[in-house]
Image: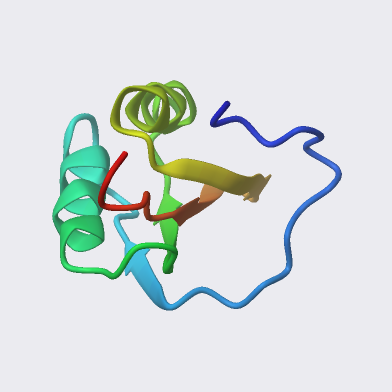
Length: 91
């Protein structure tokens, strides 16, 4: 399951990389995250910052489809933060 078990139970682990896609609309935030995750090692974490309100649904669907894990998500002042863990190679 790619959704965090409890939105209040956020993982505070530092990400390995941060991708700022604020100001970009669908499908660019997910496409840029896909490219970035493809360059990362299995298990590494990517934090994505986005302002597109549809990015919430987009990243949930992206993780469900690709096997990457949505570790945490939050929103503050219109900026959505998604912490993704890159899937294992054999998934």
